Image 1 (cartoon, rainbow, N blue to C red):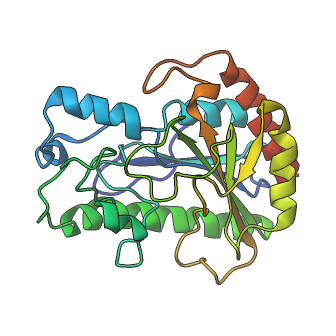
Image 2: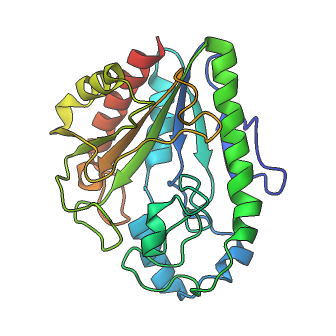
Length: 271
């Protein structure tokens, strides 16, 4: 598929990959890339070896491939919105202001600390240039994608595709609870019980499904957030030992089972 939407300041920053005209589903993949543009790399204090190690921990490895495989297998092809840059550039799922609780550990929209709470950028880094260049264009494009699905189908279903480590990392604020093979993150406004039930059924064969632990919430563009009930959303967090070698290794045999499960969910909500 060809990209049909990309930011004016960097054509490789993200991609909206088209699905079926009648599909309401957007598979959102925000954290799968390790790519960091050279000017952004210059503001990171880690040496190359330490940066690669951090990318192993912070990247949701193989989630773009998972979404692509599920899209190809689905009966009605979903749309895909894929971040082509590392979340160490900006994290498009954070609030860009003081509402973001991860600011407490230096991981707002622009991270200043690593997963192990070591310095990533100088503490006095001004986040605004990165937010202005990368965050806002991403948010506008994702908003447009959701608005387009609403216009075309009367609804939009955002399935946020993530992964998480088997062992808690120091940056996690709520990591002391259960760590099931699949964690479903929900939002009180945008995640109806019916969507949760379909996901629980789709992922039932993967060893266990939990709700909102160790991660909760689901991404919705701010223009629609808590305003448009026709936009529904669910975060799918997959424990990495179920499908890959941690922290940053190749996929294993569980990957194909995940493809089948995610395809089942896409078919169930997209029909």
